[in-house]
Image (cartoon, rainbow, N blue to C red; front, side):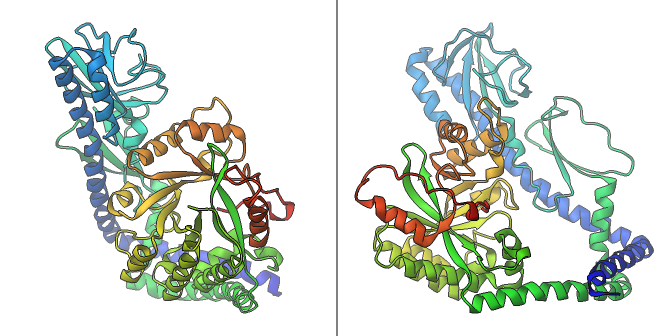
Length: 531
Protein backbone atom coordinates (compact mmCIF):
# COMPACT_ATOMS: atom_id res chain seq x y z
CA UNK A 1 0.00 0.00 0.00
CA UNK A 2 1.46 3.35 -0.99
CA UNK A 3 1.68 6.32 1.34
CA UNK A 4 -1.29 8.07 -0.26
CA UNK A 5 -3.63 5.23 0.79
CA UNK A 6 -2.26 4.62 4.28
CA UNK A 7 -4.24 7.27 6.16
CA UNK A 8 -7.72 6.48 4.71
CA UNK A 9 -7.25 2.73 5.23
CA UNK A 10 -6.11 3.12 8.84
CA UNK A 11 -8.91 5.59 9.62
CA UNK A 12 -11.57 3.21 8.20
CA UNK A 13 -10.13 0.31 10.20
CA UNK A 14 -10.19 2.36 13.42
CA UNK A 15 -13.83 3.40 12.90
CA UNK A 16 -14.88 -0.20 12.19
CA UNK A 17 -13.15 -1.47 15.34
CA UNK A 18 -14.71 1.29 17.45
CA UNK A 19 -18.23 0.46 16.24
CA UNK A 20 -17.71 -3.24 16.91
CA UNK A 21 -16.48 -2.60 20.46
CA UNK A 22 -19.40 -0.25 21.11
CA UNK A 23 -21.91 -2.92 20.06
CA UNK A 24 -20.34 -5.53 22.40
CA UNK A 25 -19.94 -3.26 25.43
CA UNK A 26 -23.18 -1.21 25.13
CA UNK A 27 -25.21 -3.54 27.39
CA UNK A 28 -22.60 -3.25 30.19
CA UNK A 29 -22.35 0.52 29.93
CA UNK A 30 -26.02 1.43 29.47
CA UNK A 31 -26.86 1.81 33.17
CA UNK A 32 -23.84 4.00 33.83
CA UNK A 33 -24.60 6.05 30.73
CA UNK A 34 -28.14 6.91 31.86
CA UNK A 35 -26.98 7.79 35.37
CA UNK A 36 -24.40 10.23 33.98
CA UNK A 37 -26.98 11.80 31.68
CA UNK A 38 -29.25 12.66 34.61
CA UNK A 39 -26.32 14.19 36.53
CA UNK A 40 -25.57 16.44 33.57
CA UNK A 41 -29.08 17.62 32.72
CA UNK A 42 -30.65 18.31 36.14
CA UNK A 43 -28.09 20.95 37.32
CA UNK A 44 -28.17 22.65 33.90
CA UNK A 45 -31.97 22.94 34.06
CA UNK A 46 -31.79 24.37 37.59
CA UNK A 47 -29.31 27.04 36.44
CA UNK A 48 -31.53 27.95 33.50
CA UNK A 49 -34.61 28.14 35.72
CA UNK A 50 -32.96 30.64 38.06
CA UNK A 51 -32.18 32.94 35.14
CA UNK A 52 -35.63 32.61 33.50
CA UNK A 53 -37.22 33.34 36.91
CA UNK A 54 -35.44 36.71 36.77
CA UNK A 55 -37.25 37.59 33.54
CA UNK A 56 -40.68 36.60 34.89
CA UNK A 57 -40.06 38.45 38.17
CA UNK A 58 -39.12 41.68 36.36
CA UNK A 59 -42.22 41.45 34.17
CA UNK A 60 -44.49 40.98 37.19
CA UNK A 61 -42.80 43.81 39.08
CA UNK A 62 -43.16 46.09 36.04
CA UNK A 63 -46.90 45.61 35.67
CA UNK A 64 -47.42 46.12 39.42
CA UNK A 65 -45.37 49.32 39.27
CA UNK A 66 -47.20 50.69 36.22
CA UNK A 67 -50.63 49.97 37.73
CA UNK A 68 -49.76 51.54 41.07
CA UNK A 69 -48.21 54.59 39.39
CA UNK A 70 -51.24 55.23 37.18
CA UNK A 71 -53.69 54.62 40.03
CA UNK A 72 -51.89 57.26 42.13
CA UNK A 73 -51.68 59.80 39.29
CA UNK A 74 -53.76 59.10 36.14
CA UNK A 75 -51.90 61.80 34.18
CA UNK A 76 -49.98 59.97 31.43
CA UNK A 77 -47.84 63.00 30.57
CA UNK A 78 -46.63 63.20 34.16
CA UNK A 79 -45.87 59.52 34.69
CA UNK A 80 -44.51 58.63 31.22
CA UNK A 81 -40.91 59.68 32.17
CA UNK A 82 -41.08 57.48 35.28
CA UNK A 83 -42.31 54.52 33.22
CA UNK A 84 -39.48 55.02 30.73
CA UNK A 85 -36.93 55.38 33.54
CA UNK A 86 -38.11 52.17 35.23
CA UNK A 87 -38.00 50.24 31.93
CA UNK A 88 -34.52 51.53 31.09
CA UNK A 89 -33.14 50.34 34.42
CA UNK A 90 -34.42 46.75 33.98
CA UNK A 91 -32.49 44.52 31.57
CA UNK A 92 -35.46 42.26 30.77
CA UNK A 93 -38.33 44.72 30.30
CA UNK A 94 -39.04 46.42 26.98
CA UNK A 95 -42.54 47.94 27.36
CA UNK A 96 -44.87 49.07 30.17
CA UNK A 97 -48.51 49.66 29.12
CA UNK A 98 -51.61 50.86 31.03
CA UNK A 99 -55.19 50.48 29.77
CA UNK A 100 -58.70 51.17 31.01
CA UNK A 101 -61.44 48.64 31.86
CA UNK A 102 -62.25 48.35 28.11
CA UNK A 103 -58.60 47.42 27.36
CA UNK A 104 -58.06 50.71 25.54
CA UNK A 105 -54.48 51.89 25.89
CA UNK A 106 -54.24 55.10 27.90
CA UNK A 107 -50.53 55.34 28.73
CA UNK A 108 -47.19 53.69 27.90
CA UNK A 109 -43.45 54.30 28.05
CA UNK A 110 -43.44 54.61 24.22
CA UNK A 111 -43.67 57.96 22.47
CA UNK A 112 -46.50 56.78 20.20
CA UNK A 113 -50.19 57.38 19.73
CA UNK A 114 -52.68 55.70 22.06
CA UNK A 115 -55.39 54.81 19.52
CA UNK A 116 -55.24 51.03 19.80
CA UNK A 117 -56.52 48.38 22.17
CA UNK A 118 -54.63 45.81 24.23
CA UNK A 119 -55.71 42.18 24.02
CA UNK A 120 -57.79 41.05 27.06
CA UNK A 121 -56.07 38.57 29.37
CA UNK A 122 -56.78 37.30 32.90
CA UNK A 123 -55.36 39.09 35.91
CA UNK A 124 -51.80 38.21 36.96
CA UNK A 125 -51.21 36.10 33.84
CA UNK A 126 -48.07 35.37 31.85
CA UNK A 127 -48.70 34.92 28.12
CA UNK A 128 -46.78 34.62 24.87
CA UNK A 129 -48.08 36.89 22.09
CA UNK A 130 -47.18 35.94 18.52
CA UNK A 131 -46.84 38.28 15.49
CA UNK A 132 -50.19 37.16 13.97
CA UNK A 133 -52.11 38.09 17.14
CA UNK A 134 -53.35 41.60 18.12
CA UNK A 135 -50.39 43.88 18.96
CA UNK A 136 -49.13 44.29 22.52
CA UNK A 137 -46.92 47.25 21.62
CA UNK A 138 -46.43 49.37 18.48
CA UNK A 139 -44.54 48.02 15.43
CA UNK A 140 -43.69 44.78 17.22
CA UNK A 141 -42.94 41.83 14.91
CA UNK A 142 -41.34 39.56 17.50
CA UNK A 143 -43.00 36.94 19.70
CA UNK A 144 -43.46 38.59 23.11
CA UNK A 145 -43.51 37.25 26.64
CA UNK A 146 -45.64 39.54 28.77
CA UNK A 147 -47.46 39.86 32.09
CA UNK A 148 -50.96 41.26 32.71
CA UNK A 149 -52.32 42.76 35.95
CA UNK A 150 -55.88 44.08 36.46
CA UNK A 151 -57.12 46.25 39.32
CA UNK A 152 -59.57 49.10 40.10
CA UNK A 153 -60.78 49.28 36.51
CA UNK A 154 -57.26 49.61 35.07
CA UNK A 155 -55.05 47.11 33.25
CA UNK A 156 -51.23 47.01 33.12
CA UNK A 157 -49.01 44.96 30.84
CA UNK A 158 -45.23 44.48 30.75
CA UNK A 159 -43.45 42.72 27.87
CA UNK A 160 -40.06 41.51 26.63
CA UNK A 161 -39.08 39.75 23.36
CA UNK A 162 -39.42 36.00 23.84
CA UNK A 163 -35.90 35.50 22.45
CA UNK A 164 -34.48 37.19 25.57
CA UNK A 165 -35.90 34.38 27.72
CA UNK A 166 -35.06 31.48 25.39
CA UNK A 167 -31.43 32.63 25.14
CA UNK A 168 -31.07 31.74 28.81
CA UNK A 169 -31.72 28.04 28.32
CA UNK A 170 -28.44 26.39 29.25
CA UNK A 171 -27.00 24.62 26.19
CA UNK A 172 -23.39 24.48 27.34
CA UNK A 173 -23.30 20.84 28.51
CA UNK A 174 -23.76 19.16 25.10
CA UNK A 175 -24.91 20.44 21.72
CA UNK A 176 -26.77 17.13 21.22
CA UNK A 177 -29.56 18.13 23.63
CA UNK A 178 -32.62 20.16 22.59
CA UNK A 179 -33.94 22.71 25.09
CA UNK A 180 -37.56 23.96 25.02
CA UNK A 181 -39.42 26.61 27.01
CA UNK A 182 -43.13 25.94 27.69
CA UNK A 183 -45.33 28.81 28.94
CA UNK A 184 -48.73 27.78 30.32
CA UNK A 185 -48.19 24.34 28.84
CA UNK A 186 -47.56 25.61 25.29
CA UNK A 187 -44.31 25.57 23.38
CA UNK A 188 -42.77 29.06 23.28
CA UNK A 189 -42.14 29.98 19.66
CA UNK A 190 -45.18 28.19 18.18
CA UNK A 191 -47.96 28.55 20.77
CA UNK A 192 -48.87 24.89 20.29
CA UNK A 193 -48.81 22.06 22.84
CA UNK A 194 -45.46 20.21 22.77
CA UNK A 195 -45.45 17.10 20.56
CA UNK A 196 -45.44 13.80 22.38
CA UNK A 197 -42.00 12.29 22.82
CA UNK A 198 -41.24 9.06 20.98
CA UNK A 199 -40.83 5.92 23.13
CA UNK A 200 -37.04 5.94 22.66
CA UNK A 201 -36.62 9.67 23.29
CA UNK A 202 -35.34 10.81 26.69
CA UNK A 203 -37.16 13.79 28.21
CA UNK A 204 -36.37 15.82 31.35
CA UNK A 205 -38.86 18.43 32.59
CA UNK A 206 -38.18 21.13 35.19
CA UNK A 207 -41.20 23.19 36.27
CA UNK A 208 -40.84 26.51 38.06
CA UNK A 209 -42.51 26.59 41.51
CA UNK A 210 -43.16 30.35 41.14
CA UNK A 211 -44.15 30.96 37.53
CA UNK A 212 -46.18 29.11 34.85
CA UNK A 213 -43.35 27.81 32.70
CA UNK A 214 -41.50 24.53 32.25
CA UNK A 215 -38.05 23.81 30.81
CA UNK A 216 -37.91 20.59 28.77
CA UNK A 217 -34.67 18.94 27.68
CA UNK A 218 -34.85 16.26 24.99
CA UNK A 219 -32.34 13.78 23.62
CA UNK A 220 -33.29 12.05 20.38
CA UNK A 221 -32.53 8.42 19.61
CA UNK A 222 -29.81 9.33 17.13
CA UNK A 223 -28.16 11.84 19.47
CA UNK A 224 -28.46 9.42 22.38
CA UNK A 225 -26.57 6.79 20.39
CA UNK A 226 -23.93 9.35 19.42
CA UNK A 227 -23.46 10.40 23.03
CA UNK A 228 -23.42 6.78 24.17
CA UNK A 229 -20.57 5.98 21.76
CA UNK A 230 -18.63 9.03 22.96
CA UNK A 231 -18.88 8.01 26.62
CA UNK A 232 -18.52 4.23 26.28
CA UNK A 233 -14.73 4.35 26.60
CA UNK A 234 -15.03 5.14 30.32
CA UNK A 235 -15.36 1.47 31.22
CA UNK A 236 -12.20 -0.60 31.64
CA UNK A 237 -13.45 -3.37 29.40
CA UNK A 238 -14.23 -0.89 26.61
CA UNK A 239 -10.81 0.72 27.07
CA UNK A 240 -9.11 -2.67 26.78
CA UNK A 241 -11.03 -3.64 23.64
CA UNK A 242 -10.58 -0.20 22.09
CA UNK A 243 -6.81 -0.06 22.67
CA UNK A 244 -5.84 -1.72 19.39
CA UNK A 245 -8.08 0.41 17.13
CA UNK A 246 -7.29 3.62 19.03
CA UNK A 247 -3.58 2.87 18.76
CA UNK A 248 -3.80 2.55 14.97
CA UNK A 249 -5.86 5.71 14.70
CA UNK A 250 -3.56 7.62 17.05
CA UNK A 251 -0.54 6.60 15.00
CA UNK A 252 -2.01 8.02 11.79
CA UNK A 253 -3.35 11.13 13.54
CA UNK A 254 0.00 11.85 15.17
CA UNK A 255 1.81 11.57 11.85
CA UNK A 256 -0.38 14.27 10.39
CA UNK A 257 -0.41 16.31 13.59
CA UNK A 258 3.38 16.27 13.99
CA UNK A 259 3.72 17.30 10.35
CA UNK A 260 1.92 20.61 10.82
CA UNK A 261 3.48 21.10 14.27
CA UNK A 262 6.96 20.80 12.78
CA UNK A 263 6.07 23.27 10.03
CA UNK A 264 4.79 25.74 12.64
CA UNK A 265 7.92 25.27 14.73
CA UNK A 266 10.18 25.97 11.75
CA UNK A 267 8.13 29.03 10.76
CA UNK A 268 8.35 30.35 14.31
CA UNK A 269 12.14 30.02 14.28
CA UNK A 270 12.28 31.95 10.98
CA UNK A 271 9.91 34.62 12.37
CA UNK A 272 7.64 33.92 9.40
CA UNK A 273 4.35 34.99 11.02
CA UNK A 274 3.38 38.58 10.24
CA UNK A 275 1.07 40.94 12.11
CA UNK A 276 -1.83 42.43 10.16
CA UNK A 277 -4.29 45.10 11.33
CA UNK A 278 -7.94 45.63 10.45
CA UNK A 279 -9.57 48.93 11.44
CA UNK A 280 -12.42 49.27 13.93
CA UNK A 281 -14.43 52.41 13.14
CA UNK A 282 -17.10 54.55 14.77
CA UNK A 283 -19.89 54.03 12.25
CA UNK A 284 -21.54 57.34 13.12
CA UNK A 285 -18.79 59.55 11.69
CA UNK A 286 -16.18 57.19 10.24
CA UNK A 287 -13.62 58.05 12.92
CA UNK A 288 -10.96 55.39 13.51
CA UNK A 289 -11.53 53.91 16.98
CA UNK A 290 -8.97 51.09 16.94
CA UNK A 291 -7.75 48.03 15.11
CA UNK A 292 -7.66 44.28 15.59
CA UNK A 293 -4.30 42.47 15.45
CA UNK A 294 -4.47 39.42 13.14
CA UNK A 295 -1.89 36.76 12.31
CA UNK A 296 -0.88 35.81 8.76
CA UNK A 297 1.64 33.28 7.39
CA UNK A 298 2.68 34.54 3.93
CA UNK A 299 5.11 31.68 3.21
CA UNK A 300 2.81 28.88 4.41
CA UNK A 301 2.47 25.61 2.47
CA UNK A 302 -0.47 25.51 0.09
CA UNK A 303 -2.76 23.59 2.46
CA UNK A 304 -2.11 25.83 5.50
CA UNK A 305 -2.13 29.35 4.04
CA UNK A 306 -5.35 30.53 5.68
CA UNK A 307 -5.48 31.37 9.40
CA UNK A 308 -8.45 29.07 9.99
CA UNK A 309 -6.22 26.18 8.84
CA UNK A 310 -2.99 26.81 10.77
CA UNK A 311 -4.26 28.53 13.94
CA UNK A 312 -6.37 25.59 15.29
CA UNK A 313 -3.38 23.15 15.26
CA UNK A 314 -1.26 25.91 16.79
CA UNK A 315 -3.77 26.19 19.65
CA UNK A 316 -3.92 22.42 20.12
CA UNK A 317 -0.13 22.09 20.22
CA UNK A 318 0.44 25.09 22.50
CA UNK A 319 2.50 26.95 19.89
CA UNK A 320 -0.13 29.68 19.74
CA UNK A 321 1.55 31.25 22.80
CA UNK A 322 4.98 31.95 21.21
CA UNK A 323 3.31 32.74 17.86
CA UNK A 324 1.07 35.39 19.45
CA UNK A 325 3.97 36.83 21.42
CA UNK A 326 6.03 37.01 18.23
CA UNK A 327 3.53 39.08 16.25
CA UNK A 328 2.92 41.34 19.27
CA UNK A 329 6.67 41.97 19.47
CA UNK A 330 6.81 42.76 15.73
CA UNK A 331 3.87 45.12 16.07
CA UNK A 332 5.49 46.92 19.00
CA UNK A 333 8.71 47.32 17.03
CA UNK A 334 6.77 48.67 14.04
CA UNK A 335 5.11 51.33 16.21
CA UNK A 336 8.48 53.02 16.85
CA UNK A 337 8.39 56.48 15.30
CA UNK A 338 4.61 56.45 14.81
CA UNK A 339 1.85 58.07 16.82
CA UNK A 340 -1.57 56.57 17.32
CA UNK A 341 -4.77 58.63 17.66
CA UNK A 342 -5.87 59.38 21.24
CA UNK A 343 -8.19 56.76 22.77
CA UNK A 344 -7.10 54.24 20.13
CA UNK A 345 -7.87 50.63 21.14
CA UNK A 346 -5.69 47.79 19.88
CA UNK A 347 -7.44 44.38 20.05
CA UNK A 348 -5.54 41.10 20.45
CA UNK A 349 -7.28 37.71 20.17
CA UNK A 350 -6.77 35.55 23.26
CA UNK A 351 -7.30 31.79 23.68
CA UNK A 352 -7.42 30.12 27.13
CA UNK A 353 -3.76 28.98 26.93
CA UNK A 354 -2.62 32.61 26.73
CA UNK A 355 -4.44 33.62 29.93
CA UNK A 356 -2.00 31.60 32.06
CA UNK A 357 1.20 32.12 30.01
CA UNK A 358 3.85 34.33 31.74
CA UNK A 359 5.43 35.13 28.35
CA UNK A 360 2.11 36.52 27.12
CA UNK A 361 1.69 38.54 30.33
CA UNK A 362 5.11 40.12 29.79
CA UNK A 363 4.33 40.90 26.15
CA UNK A 364 0.99 42.49 27.13
CA UNK A 365 2.73 44.66 29.71
CA UNK A 366 5.29 45.85 27.17
CA UNK A 367 2.75 46.57 24.43
CA UNK A 368 0.32 48.25 26.82
CA UNK A 369 3.08 50.51 28.11
CA UNK A 370 3.97 51.47 24.53
CA UNK A 371 0.32 52.22 23.69
CA UNK A 372 -0.02 54.33 26.83
CA UNK A 373 2.56 56.75 25.41
CA UNK A 374 -0.08 57.78 22.85
CA UNK A 375 -2.98 57.56 25.31
CA UNK A 376 -4.05 54.34 23.60
CA UNK A 377 -5.17 51.12 25.30
CA UNK A 378 -4.91 47.38 24.85
CA UNK A 379 -8.06 45.24 24.48
CA UNK A 380 -7.94 41.44 24.92
CA UNK A 381 -10.63 39.58 22.96
CA UNK A 382 -11.48 36.21 24.51
CA UNK A 383 -13.28 34.14 21.89
CA UNK A 384 -16.54 32.35 22.77
CA UNK A 385 -15.61 29.44 20.51
CA UNK A 386 -13.43 28.07 23.34
CA UNK A 387 -14.64 28.02 26.91
CA UNK A 388 -12.57 30.23 29.20
CA UNK A 389 -13.39 31.00 32.85
CA UNK A 390 -13.28 34.80 33.04
CA UNK A 391 -14.58 35.04 36.60
CA UNK A 392 -11.42 33.40 38.04
CA UNK A 393 -8.52 34.99 36.16
CA UNK A 394 -4.95 34.14 37.24
CA UNK A 395 -3.71 36.66 39.85
CA UNK A 396 -0.79 37.68 37.62
CA UNK A 397 -3.15 38.55 34.77
CA UNK A 398 -5.60 40.35 37.07
CA UNK A 399 -2.80 42.54 38.36
CA UNK A 400 -1.68 43.23 34.80
CA UNK A 401 -5.17 44.33 33.76
CA UNK A 402 -5.38 46.75 36.68
CA UNK A 403 -1.87 48.13 36.30
CA UNK A 404 -2.08 48.91 32.59
CA UNK A 405 -5.86 49.54 32.30
CA UNK A 406 -6.25 46.64 29.87
CA UNK A 407 -9.85 45.91 28.84
CA UNK A 408 -11.46 42.50 28.29
CA UNK A 409 -13.92 41.73 25.49
CA UNK A 410 -15.90 38.64 24.49
CA UNK A 411 -15.39 37.88 20.80
CA UNK A 412 -17.93 36.05 18.58
CA UNK A 413 -20.63 36.77 21.17
CA UNK A 414 -23.74 34.61 20.77
CA UNK A 415 -22.09 31.77 18.83
CA UNK A 416 -19.89 29.92 21.30
CA UNK A 417 -19.77 27.95 24.53
CA UNK A 418 -20.32 30.76 27.03
CA UNK A 419 -23.85 31.61 28.13
CA UNK A 420 -25.34 34.62 29.89
CA UNK A 421 -24.08 33.36 33.25
CA UNK A 422 -20.59 34.33 32.03
CA UNK A 423 -21.68 37.96 31.73
CA UNK A 424 -23.22 37.91 35.22
CA UNK A 425 -20.12 36.38 36.82
CA UNK A 426 -17.32 38.35 35.16
CA UNK A 427 -17.14 42.01 36.10
CA UNK A 428 -14.06 42.74 33.97
CA UNK A 429 -15.68 42.28 30.57
CA UNK A 430 -16.85 45.61 29.14
CA UNK A 431 -17.04 44.95 25.37
CA UNK A 432 -19.05 42.41 23.35
CA UNK A 433 -18.15 41.77 19.70
CA UNK A 434 -21.22 40.55 17.82
CA UNK A 435 -20.27 37.75 15.43
CA UNK A 436 -20.59 38.41 11.69
CA UNK A 437 -22.88 35.37 11.29
CA UNK A 438 -25.76 37.45 12.69
CA UNK A 439 -25.60 39.99 9.84
CA UNK A 440 -24.43 37.79 6.94
CA UNK A 441 -26.86 38.02 4.06
CA UNK A 442 -28.79 40.93 5.60
CA UNK A 443 -30.83 43.01 3.16
CA UNK A 444 -32.66 46.29 3.92
CA UNK A 445 -36.09 45.50 5.32
CA UNK A 446 -35.11 42.06 6.64
CA UNK A 447 -36.34 41.04 10.09
CA UNK A 448 -33.50 39.82 12.33
CA UNK A 449 -35.05 38.98 15.75
CA UNK A 450 -32.06 37.04 17.10
CA UNK A 451 -29.66 39.91 16.40
CA UNK A 452 -32.17 42.35 17.95
CA UNK A 453 -32.36 40.24 21.12
CA UNK A 454 -28.56 39.90 21.42
CA UNK A 455 -28.09 43.66 21.02
CA UNK A 456 -30.89 44.42 23.49
CA UNK A 457 -29.32 42.22 26.17
CA UNK A 458 -25.86 43.66 25.58
CA UNK A 459 -27.08 47.26 25.79
CA UNK A 460 -29.27 46.68 28.85
CA UNK A 461 -26.34 45.10 30.69
CA UNK A 462 -24.13 48.10 29.95
CA UNK A 463 -21.65 46.61 27.46
CA UNK A 464 -20.03 48.48 24.59
CA UNK A 465 -20.97 46.65 21.36
CA UNK A 466 -18.86 46.12 18.25
CA UNK A 467 -20.48 44.72 15.09
CA UNK A 468 -18.27 42.44 12.98
CA UNK A 469 -18.62 41.65 9.28
CA UNK A 470 -19.94 45.08 8.22
CA UNK A 471 -19.60 44.86 4.45
CA UNK A 472 -22.14 47.35 3.06
CA UNK A 473 -24.09 50.48 3.91
CA UNK A 474 -27.29 48.55 4.63
CA UNK A 475 -25.68 46.60 7.49
CA UNK A 476 -24.02 49.79 8.78
CA UNK A 477 -27.33 51.67 8.91
CA UNK A 478 -29.12 48.71 10.55
CA UNK A 479 -26.52 48.40 13.34
CA UNK A 480 -26.49 52.15 13.98
CA UNK A 481 -30.29 52.15 14.27
CA UNK A 482 -30.00 49.51 17.01
CA UNK A 483 -27.34 51.47 18.90
CA UNK A 484 -24.26 49.50 17.78
CA UNK A 485 -21.85 52.34 17.08
CA UNK A 486 -18.53 50.57 16.51
CA UNK A 487 -18.04 48.49 13.37
CA UNK A 488 -15.45 46.23 11.78
CA UNK A 489 -15.55 44.81 8.28
CA UNK A 490 -14.74 45.16 4.60
CA UNK A 491 -16.81 48.36 4.30
CA UNK A 492 -14.08 50.12 6.29
CA UNK A 493 -11.01 48.10 5.35
CA UNK A 494 -9.47 44.68 4.84
CA UNK A 495 -6.72 43.29 7.08
CA UNK A 496 -3.43 44.74 5.82
CA UNK A 497 0.24 44.51 6.94
CA UNK A 498 1.12 46.75 9.88
CA UNK A 499 3.47 48.87 7.75
CA UNK A 500 0.65 49.64 5.28
CA UNK A 501 -1.76 50.46 8.09
CA UNK A 502 0.70 52.86 9.76
CA UNK A 503 1.59 54.56 6.45
CA UNK A 504 -2.10 55.12 5.81
CA UNK A 505 -2.50 56.47 9.34
CA UNK A 506 0.51 58.78 9.12
CA UNK A 507 -0.55 60.11 5.71
CA UNK A 508 -3.82 61.42 7.16
CA UNK A 509 -2.72 62.31 10.68
CA UNK A 510 -2.14 65.99 9.85
CA UNK A 511 -4.18 66.70 6.75
CA UNK A 512 -7.38 65.17 8.17
CA UNK A 513 -7.00 65.91 11.87
CA UNK A 514 -10.38 65.45 13.50
CA UNK A 515 -11.94 64.00 10.36
CA UNK A 516 -12.73 60.47 9.29
CA UNK A 517 -9.98 58.46 7.62
CA UNK A 518 -10.77 57.09 4.16
CA UNK A 519 -11.22 53.30 4.05
CA UNK A 520 -8.13 51.17 3.59
CA UNK A 521 -8.01 49.91 0.02
CA UNK A 522 -9.01 46.28 -0.54
CA UNK A 523 -6.09 44.09 -1.59
CA UNK A 524 -6.87 40.91 -3.50
CA UNK A 525 -4.03 38.97 -1.91
CA UNK A 526 -5.45 39.68 1.57
CA UNK A 527 -9.12 39.10 0.77
CA UNK A 528 -9.64 36.12 3.10
CA UNK A 529 -11.86 37.25 5.98
CA UNK A 530 -10.93 35.70 9.32
CA UNK A 531 -12.34 36.80 12.67
